[in-house]
Image 1: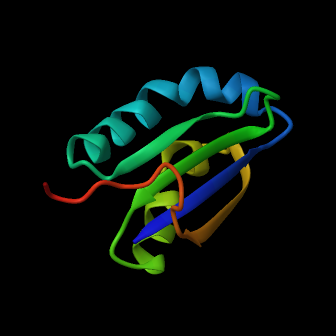
Image 2: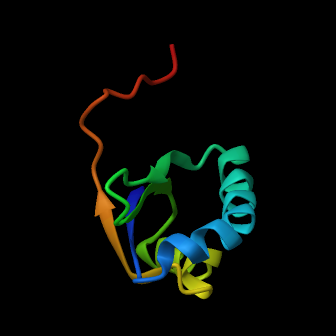
Length: 95
């Protein structure tokens, strides 16, 4: 199942983001190595980040978001996790 994680930066998120980015990226890279990151990156209006991951349950996705260094270190003032159904681009199955 896919889940969207929206992390909304706090007032000092930009400064904290610089400090905690290596830990955040290391965690994301570990999940990406498992083939579970659909897409991820910062919002260019500097309001936060968008992360789309594969997880077995909403609880697993929520735990991932809650344990992210950006959440733990206060980069994100608020985090939302939503189930997501991908329509485009169309996924290709086994050939």
